[in-house]
Image (cartoon, rainbow, N blue to C red; front, side, top):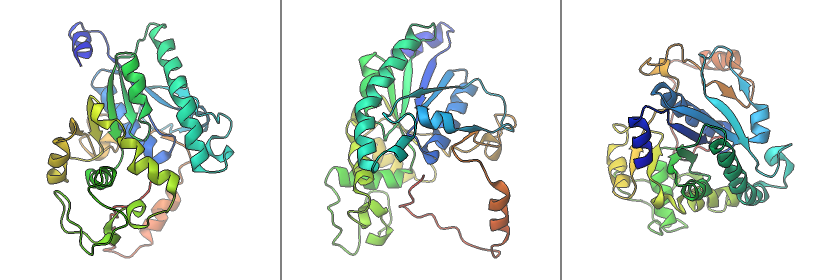
Length: 292
């Protein structure tokens, strides 16, 4: 943090890389956070994989932004995960190629007059912290899910919540009593999507204790008790909800859309579906929702 503070004091623009896992539900919150950093005066570069960067649609109705888009290799530059025989094979190769590719990107930027000062990385890509430390940069893990979900995964990771779930009632810090079916699917339905389960329950916490900051996509008042508990273990900051500014504080003028989409938005069909629902329909937030 000392280097960033010195640079800020000298009025030089801090440059932050924001690295996203290549999925829409991860790009969205990280991009919104990147907009906030840019609004505060930082130079921001959003980073994803080559294949996803070529697939992104930029929303023409979004406000102008100087956030640049860069890419690293996941080993499947022409087809992404669709080139593989499954998620496990994709992640294995990404973990081999990704760190080297990110190092090359940082080296190129450091030699081009826009040196990197910090890396905000998707917690699904924990090796990015090793890259940050290699270059002496600040590294901040970004948890795209809520504190409650992250806390559950952390308890499983540390062996504090034993699997399979045998008790009819589960008691975890800051949460009301929960039943097994209230758990995320990777915890309740043990063995479902094993490669992804390892990533969310194991790998994303491998080195999170060494991160300079842990940023969580929630807001403190929503999950106060759980956030306080996690804050005793990590340098936690709640920075959400990461949605366009016009739906929150309106600090970023005309910021109504996310800006980048892997899939071409179909707003009319979504609005029609909502309008066809009965009045008073309850939208239930399930702990185990998996964002793609």
